[in-house]
Length: 230
Image (cartoon, rainbow, N blue to C red; front, side, top):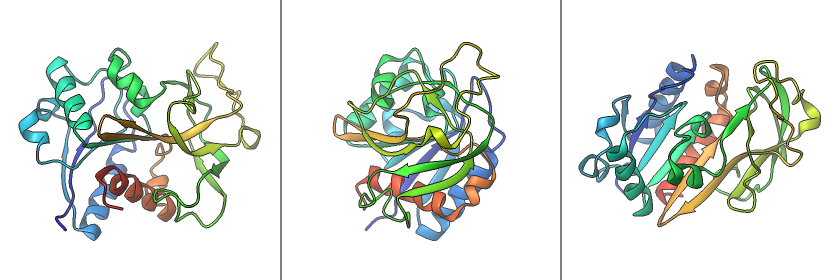
């Protein structure tokens, strides 16, 4: 089996997360252990059919805002619909608000979050390759917990949601007027788009999360699942 070839993209045109270096470090360490090839870049001009032809999975690492022009958008769309995998870590839902294809593929967009705090996450499917490593049906973790403009559950496969009773979801000090409470509150899901898969996982704000063995295995699972290698 050929090693996976990843393109990790961390360009930001909006908020820039301080944990991007920690995420890159974790992904490089994972790639070293798994024998994957990894290219990390913030150069959007690499998104061409000729470059993407050799890539198995594109990883958006805490991207934000409008990071692509039309040429790059078309290249990524063709890549996914032809069978490629796209994994978005943390702020994929805070990216490309004006690109209709991406918004439909990602399932929802970010609206707000309270300060970093502990919460209980619900592992909805313990048999799925991306979540089967979790030892229990719940996972307590500390991170920045996103809310979204809509509940995408009817259009995507939800694997992890968050129990809103276990953290202060209504603290919207940075997002005045935003209703962060969703009741049914998915955090991790994927969408089959053409022949490919778009996978979004909202955790990944803090440096510490990237050192969490459970989270690292979750990232491995997403990448392998999107590549068909699971």
